[in-house]
Image (tube, rainbow, N blue to C red; front, side, top):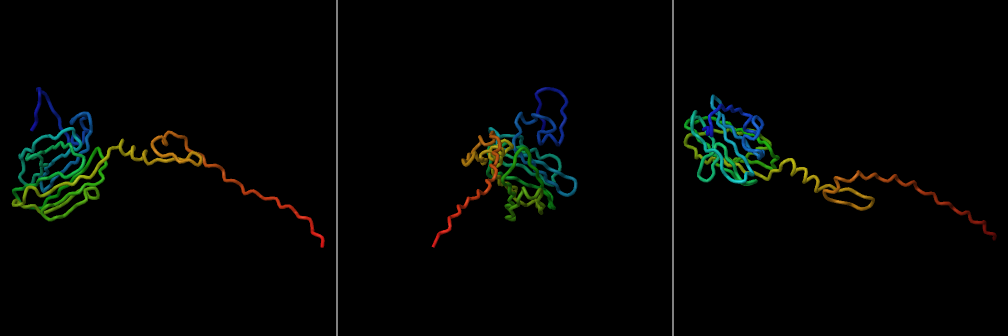
Length: 213
């Protein structure tokens, strides 16, 4: 579905999903996102996009058009979304799957604009838990009789580049002589030069006069 406010020509590319192909496609700020792609191993690919840390929930509803050989959507507030904006920064997000033809499917994903501490794909049908940071795809047998609520994604805390730099800064420490200083001010100090090692001092020995017997 395309909604426009005036007549004209619109060009769409895959890069727009990461906000790189067309700046400000989703606004001026690049929010952390997860792209999901479902392939049936033949001629069909279905896509859903999750953006996190948004000011409010919303997005674009999923349109069930095209191939019936597998679809995915992000479920929120009793609505199926193709692009879902969430105001959460961690938690659980249902990922719905449906097909009208049984077969083998591969769910793949990638992330952008954030460093996630953990991402876990949970297959509610088999009970499998899949580390999405160590792997980028999951293959499974799908049937038309499967419950739509087959998957969910468990999202751990994420940080952007600036937050990562803050964490490093807060853990910084330096020594000024024998005094230790912790915190962000350490980054603005000149590196402390270690004092030259002291040379061992030789003690002079006084020679005692010989005692006379």
